[in-house]
Image (tube, rainbow, N blue to C red; front, side, top):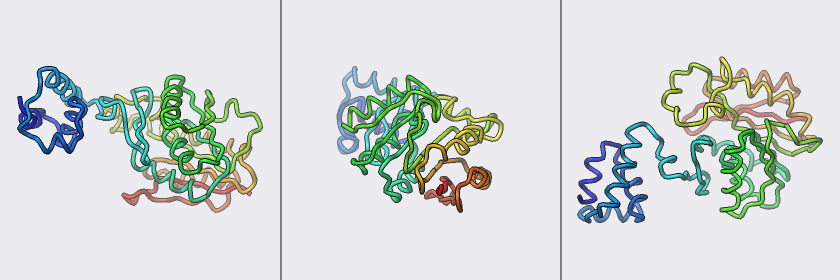
Length: 263
């Protein structure tokens, strides 16, 4: 079987097929594309067909490969953590604009947001909290891989932080509503990191009122949320004492991050 034949018979998206074949061969995606007549060894063919079969079954490419790029970082991922999404890069952009000296990342998962912030603000203190021990291990491995010094804490939201105060708190909490019709498409990802009550806002309702006690004067809270949730999140921010809360759209024009400043 040649490269061209393998790609044509995979039964999956062409770009994803090239990615998976590159992983199976150890070649770059460009090299796979450049030599379609190259014959595959039986071992590589077997690996690729297994990858393609898993993808046809709905398993995300990132879990098959065991990695995902986020904000220029190659991160290890597995089913213990959510796959980092491009829209979450907005959360990092907004955080960096505020140039904080200390940052708290709630529900860090793979460590994507915390690591991106530490990479671009190496002098900042970055603390990352995660309730899942399995996810926290993934985040720790990613920090070691990239040589980034993150303070990891095992706990739910603000557990174990004592009286620590931060210039900025960021969170990409679960915000999908129970029963959302898109959930079957996300069945390989950890439900606890996706679903948050009947309207998807339970986690945000926990985080927002508790955040001011952990913010320094003038500190910011920035939260990623789902489409159509910005008004409810703004109301929660106002009720917790945040001044003039705002919402920011992602590249698709969807209000994706809301936040406010505490005086």
